Amino acid sequence: MNLQLALDRLTRDECFQLLKETEPYVDWIEIGTGVIKEYGMEIVREVKECYREKVIVADMKTCDAGTHEAIQAFEAGADITTVMAFSADQTILDTLEVAKRYNKQIMIDLLGVTNQNRLIELQRLGVNLVSLHFGKDMQKQGELGAEQLAFTTGFPDVKVAVAGGINVTSLPRVLKTNPHTVIVGSAITKADNPKQTAAHMKGLFN
Ligand SMILES: O=C(CO)[C@H](O)[C@H](O)COP(=O)(O)O
Image 1: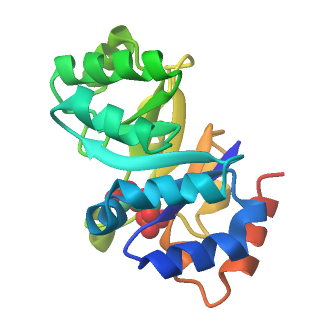
Image 2 (image 1 turned 30 degrees about the horizontal axis):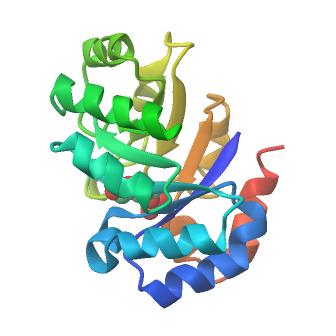
């Protein structure tokens, strides 16, 4: 099981300071969508250069122009780039094709998808990595519940990453569902002691 640290709503310096402190406990590093919007692909390139042994996830949240955006992410050094599940099938197919060409991966973000039929379709298109994502704004009205966590049950061939306000309290409940990857952002990045929090959370994986 991987711990993916999501770097969102942070400056470049904050990203690198957080990585310096938490790197031993983190398996995958996500450059958040807002951080990419602020600093462009250059920050993906810089993080990969500093952390070559880590899996770098560029949270591009691509929903169109899939070929172009997947190439942008992989050329910058991302190992995985994200694509929204509601995108046209052609976008999903195009990004999968680019990933194959670069020997990299696509993570499909299920934000807003409530019908399992889309997951069936995605699997048929060749998708094998998804993120079960309870969005930042949805978190204002609740938290990732058992119903959302059960959404990918019955898809043993699909690797599932789980995201959305996961903290020290909710992590044990998430871990019980045996996800491939747990994505944690603010619980670590906004913690008084990010290093201690990352170490504690990673410790719960064992
Ligand atoms: O994709 C994201 C926001 O769009 C975040 O990466 C994801 O929600 C994890 O962050 P947090 O733990 O703060 O919710």
